[in-house]
Length: 132
Length: 132
DNA sequence: TTTTTTGCAAAGTTTTTGCACGGTC
DNA sequence: GACCGTGCAAAAACTTTGCAAAAAA
Image (tube, rainbow over all chains, first blue to last red; front, side):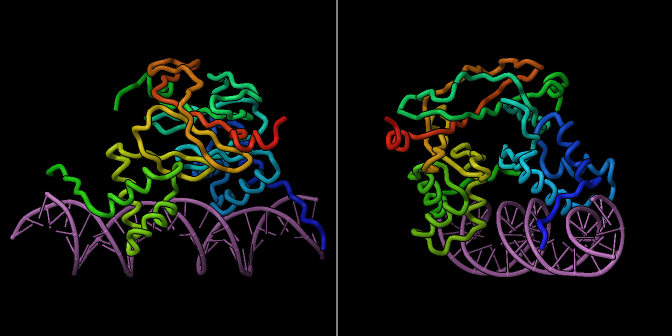
């Protein structure tokens, strides 16, 4: 038996690109919708399988926000997320609001290794056209 | 269309107490298991409905940690969570590492309403066990 | 051609909903 | 007694898995 080799397919390429081009981490459904613009016949199962594959390969990774699992490309450096309370979209922010270097000891004796910040509010689009 | 009145029931009391007595935010299943110690016949649907009700009443709120939606009592003041990468326990921290008043406008035009911070690292117990 | 991948559909899971009975007010 | 809440079971929503056909190598 041979070790299975991961092949390059149109589906995988499109899904990977969709994630790369996204404004932030995408939920399975977002990926499906966007990828179908290029591949109308794309099946849901393929999306799930591809997201799992890309995750195992370390090319993307899951982020859970508001109880929903989303995926974003790895290697985009330190960043955080902004969840719009109006339209529900999630954006990636490259500005970090905290200063917590690794090794910082928090009150109580908690030794910090990493941190995650999620901001909530109105995204530029919704803040500008604040009509409901 | 009368405003529905929320009644006090044994199920709701037990579920609320389970959350209050918990050492940290609980997942639906945790709530179900613990509440059934007092109410063996408690149905899953009731747990979901009650968690939703309590959330709408603002008495509890959901937090997503490690890809799972959990619930914790509200009114415990502004706080954040620390997830120990060694023992897996989640702690509540009352010190806030960020200064982001409501209305702050983030670069790009994001209007901040709230924020959530999750810190990862070694809790006091685990840090002490391996530090010099 | 050989082996992997895909799309469809069936099978699992998880969460929500419809109902009749039971409980609270 | 009126009306809300509960448990059960069915339904809907969300993921995973089995297969034969299609695609990559």
